[in-house]
Image (tube, rainbow, N blue to C red; front, side):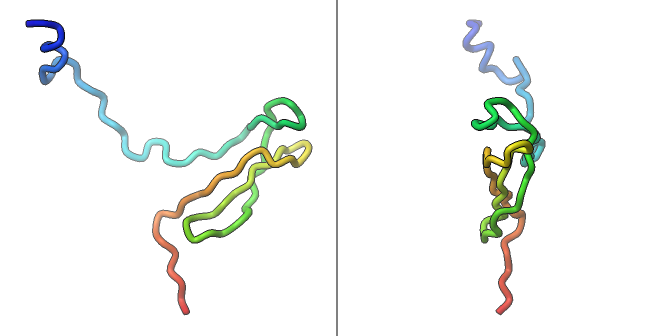
Length: 82
């Protein structure tokens, strides 16, 4: 049996199963600030409420420079009552 056939045979090397939902969302605690020129703690601010999710802005804790943004996607769609 060649190595190619052995690697493709079932049960040769069990492949790790993907964990569904292990890391869906991250919140940044530190990001690089171009004004401070180093990695700094950040503050997360709600910027906009959009139909596809809430948009957050990450700001430097020292100089308040915007260092990033994130859209937090909602699990279920928004229902508008009219």
